[in-house]
Image (cartoon, rainbow, N blue to C red; front, side, top):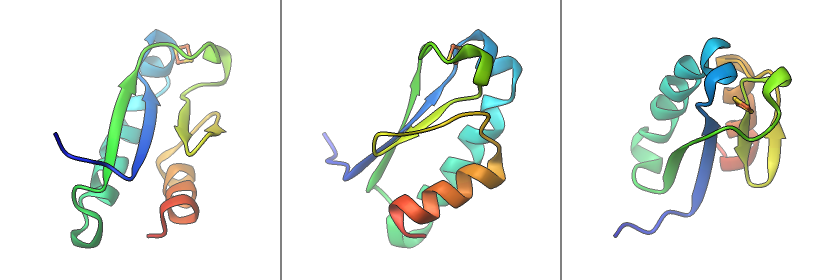
Length: 83
Ligand code: FES
């Protein structure tokens, strides 16, 4: 089993799905698949994290990002995982 250095949790519960979690998953994949970072980061699709009204929700290194968008997620990942 691969050993990942960091995990990116993206809620795929009903409300987050309605609010665009699929575009977040795509953005996260694009970033973690860059050559420098291949295989180091694991994207984990989660069930509801109980922040439904503020979704879509992403958690990276214990930081919760509410109302995430691809741009906000990119900024968070650049800060947390150094892209
Ligand atoms: S559906 Fe995402 S936090 Fe509840």
